[in-house]
Every structure is written in C-alpha cells, then in structure tokens.
Length: 172
Image: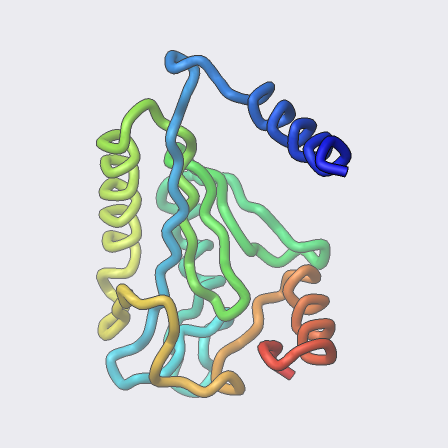
C-alpha cells in the first residue's frame, strides 16, 4: 500500500521539478492591491458618484490611458476594467481596489522601481482629485458592502452569486 501512496506524490514531485527554471531564467513578479478611499470616509466606487462628482475607478483608468497611452482592457460589455502598461497589468478587484501586477523582473529592486514609477504616475493623474487616499490595508474598514460598487466584470458577478449561496464568506 505504501508504494501506491508514493506514486501520486512522485508524479506530483516530478511535475514540479520539470518546471524548475535555471537560475539565469528565473524572474520575480509582484501583485500589489491598493484600496482607495475618500477623506470623508466614502468609498472609491467604479463609477463617478453622480451626487458628489467624486471620480471613480473607471475615471482613474481613463485618465491613466489618456496620460500614458496604456492599452485598455475591457469587459465583454465594453467597460474599461484594466490596463496594460510598461510596468505590467493594472486591474480592478471586485470593489474597485486597484491592483498593479508587475511583470516578472530579474530582481526585487527592479520590481520596486516599477511600483514606484507606477505610484508616481497614478499620483500625477489624481493630484487634482482632492481627498483621495490609498490605504495600506487589505480591507475597507469604513464602508459597508452595500456602499461599494461591484465592478462590471462577469467573473466577479458569478463569484458573488455562487459564493453567496454556497458559504458564509460571499457578499449576498
């Protein structure tokens, strides 16, 4: 019986080992997700708030595209939900959190340089948006779920529906 149990592990181990790259081919990448929030505590939503006129994540992506010519990534309905840029890929998470996935680099210092450049470019685009702050947190502690827009990505709408029915960690 021991041999039977070892075979799947041996197969799995061999699979991982077959994908190991030489040191000269190895790269490091990083995904950094940032939550934006307005100084008054209101959520940074996908769309510009009709009442307060506070720009949303859709407007941020539009401004980055216009300022730097970054290629748009759109949902099936044609709404911008991300960008491709020299740093890697910019995407929106379900509640309009902005994620920068830095392309694989040779060193962590190169990754850090790309993140610093990206942050500087975002700061330049939003400098006239008084009161928008990016938090160094993994959750938005000031807004209820119903105060945060779900971005128009079919993937997140499916996840929201399914997780809401199958477990205690969904949003519905």
